Each structure stands twice: as C-alpha cells, then as structure tokens.
Length: 230
Image (cartoon, rainbow, N blue to C red):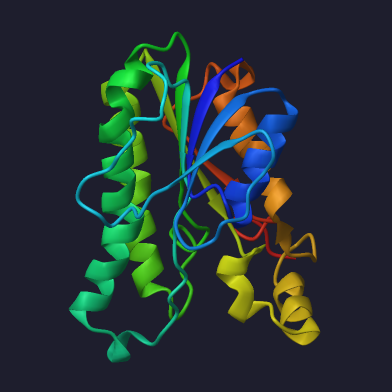
C-alpha cells in the first residue's frame, strides 16, 4: 500500500483519481477547498493552496505519490487581459504546484518509489485562440516537470499529463449544453470529449511501478487532438 497525496481531490479529475486509487487499496490523503465531495476511505483535509502556510501535519512520514490538480480555464481575448490576470493564474497553477512539491519533498525522499504527477494542457503544444493565460501557466508546468525530473532523479520521478477538454466541473461553462458538448467532441479525432476517469487512469499508471522507467514526460491524453488531423 502506497501513501498518495492528492491536492484538489474533491472535484473533477482529482475526485476520480481518489476514487480509483482507493479501489486499488492505496492510502489516499486528499485536500478540498470549496467542494467537500468525499470518497469513502480517503483521508480529507481542507487546504487553500493560495495561503502562505500549509498545515500538512496529518500526513504520514513517507509519501509515495503527489498529484497536483487545482487549475482554471480562463479563456478571453488577449487584448482584454491584464497582467494581474496572468499573475493570478500563475499563482494557482504554478506557484501552488511548487509549494506542494516543496512542502512534501522530505516525505517523498523517504519513499522507495516516489512519483509526482502534474497537469498541463493540449493548448501548450497546439496553439488555440483565447488560451494565452492557461497556455502560459501550463507551459511553465511543462518546463518545471522536465527540470525537476532531472534534478530529483533517480529517487523521485516527475511526469505531466496534458489533457484536452474533459467533462469536469472545471470545464462546465464550455460543456453546459448538448450542442457545446457535441461541438467539442467533433474537434477531436476520436469524436468524443474526455472523461475524468480517462485522466485518472493515466495518473494511476504514472504513480505505479508500471511506469517505473518514465520520468520527465508529457503525456498527451487528448483524444488525438495534438497530433492528428482527420
């Protein structure tokens, strides 16, 4: 049994990942902020990732896996954005991930097979209009993934998942009608929108020993959108 910490484990991909890992008999410690959805068997505690000091006193001495899930999808024309909009997003998506890693790094180093999983987006490598904020932040996450994978190897593996649009509360405004959902599905070669469980399965793989020879990788779980034109 491994000890897994999921930052943002009460909604969307984080919630689905928590459920999957509990079903695999892992010990999951999951945080929530506003949402209080809870999976039976997981140990939840409240955490605002924007606060300066994090109370992680409930965690065990050894953490085998860390998953950082919090994010935003702020899609606006570049001309309407201010520098503070980019800064706010960067604090949540990048600084939050950095805080999480630094906070539990000593516990990860005590593991025999530690793994960190971060999240990017298909929009980093495939340019989309109105995605300047999210692409900027997630581009930084991809750089952080590779840098930390080099620095922390061989004891800690660091990988990143870059999904396309996924049917979660985070993407609710983009998928809140059948017409929007179908339109987004048709953009993908597989002609469907991703589900939270699709990403959760990839997270579980990256946390497990089945991916023990993988680090510094950006996995595109995106219905083929990043590489295929059909």
